[in-house]
Each structure stands twice: as structure tokens, then as C-alpha cells.
Amino acid sequence: MRDQRLWAWHIGAGAVILVLLGLHMTVMHLDAIVRVFNPAPGEPVDWANVVARGKSVFFLVTYVLLLGTALFHGFYGLRNILFELNPGAPAKKAMNGLFLVAGLVLFAIGTWAAWAGFTVARSA
Amino acid sequence: MIENKGRPNRLGVKGWLGGGRWGFERYLYALHRLTGLALLAYFVMHIGITSSRAFGENAWTSTMGVVKGPLFSVGEFLVFAAFAFHAVNGIRLALVELGFAIGQPIEPVYPYRTSVDEQRPLAIGVMILAAILAIVGGIGFLK
Image (cartoon, rainbow over all chains, first blue to last red; front, side, top):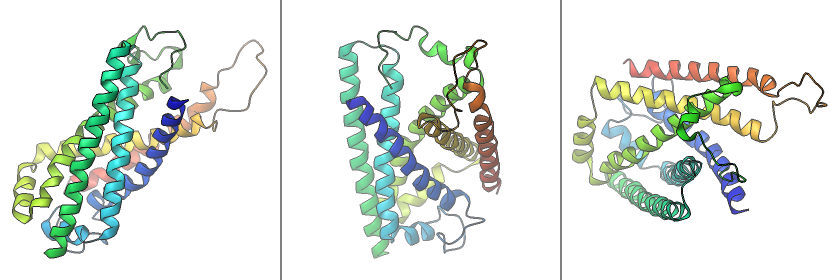
């Protein structure tokens, strides 16, 4: 039952990622067509544009949401691939622990960076 | 799903390479996994690299200077193409999982028909969409 629930979350996270990563790709790579998120001239990765987006609460919230859903989707997908190779019970337990800790650590780093970037952009 | 119901996965990763009677969709399954693994690896690096903006303009500019150049542009395009494929194929997988585009149930009368044939137009359609997305996105990398 737990696996069915996690699988449903995996698909749900995929739907969220589709929207948020689609937006991220539009902002970063379709800037020739859609300029609204990059008000300063130049590349989307130029500091002026990074600051312009970084000031926005919308981008702060969506970055953290994308971070969490993508980490869950990615690590749960990796866990499924490895579990299908029939590892023993101790290896499964170790992988569960490893992916959980790795996901939480990366989420903490990314959330801190998003918040710090937000405060840096607000004070710029 | 990870439950094998007493039928262990004997082929392992080698099973990804042979489509067998599943054909095209089986190769999409393998490619979905490969692109997923590549995207996860890139994402972990991406978190580290983009975190540099927390340290201000100088740190950001110097980090962006390191990841600039034709090699990184090609790499970024491959990531974009992997995203385009993984996203649209993921939509296909979710639709099939929810029972869409697999045809109506039919009597199991010989000669048996497989629902894989019913799914084929969707698989071909999403691959065309993925190719269009990769090409449109790729224009940005040519700048």
C-alpha cells in the first residue's frame, strides 16, 4: 500500500515538475520569444536578470516547490530502478536511508540558497 | 512499481537493451530511464552551481564564467532535449497508466490482438512533439 501511495505521489510530482520546469525552461531558454521574465537586456543568466527574478516571491516559492518535487521524483525514480534489480533487504534499507538523507540535504541546501538569493536580490 | 510478485527481474539492466515483442515502447522505457538518470545527475550539479547566487554578484559571475563555452552549450542542449523527451514521454506513461489510449477491452479470441498496437499512435505523436520541442529549444543554444 505504501508503494502504491508513493507511486501516486511520483506521478503527481511529475505533473507539478512539468508545469514548473516548463516555466523554468521557458524563462531560461526561450528568452528570444518570451522576454517578460528577463527585463534587462542580455542573457537570462546575467546578474541583472538574476536579481530581477530573485526579488520575486513567486520565483522564490516556485523554486523551492520545484526543488522538493524534483528531488522526490528523481530519487524515488532512482530507487525504483535499483529495486527492480533485486537487491537484498539490507541493501534496500541502506538505499532508502541514503536517498532520504541525500534528498533532505539537497533540499536544505537549495532552500537556503533560494532564500539567501532572495535576500541578496532584495538588497541589491 | 517495485513489487515483482515472485518473478525476479532476471535480465537486469540488459533487459533495457532488447525491446522484444514490446518493440518501440520498450525502447522508450529504456530511454525514459536513461534520461531520468541523466537529469537527476544534472539537477544535483545544478543545485550546487546556482547556489552561488546566494554569495552575491562576484560569486555568480565567476561561477557562470566557469560553465561557459561551446562544450557546456552542447551539454545544456542535451539536457534540454532529455527534458523534452522525459516530459512528453512521462505524459504518455501517465495517460497509459490511467487507462487512456489503450483501446477498449475485447474478447480474448484467437488471433489475439495486443493493446500495444492501440498505444502506438500516442507513442509516435509524443516523440514528434519531443523532437519539435528539442528543435525549438535548440535554437536558443545556437546564439
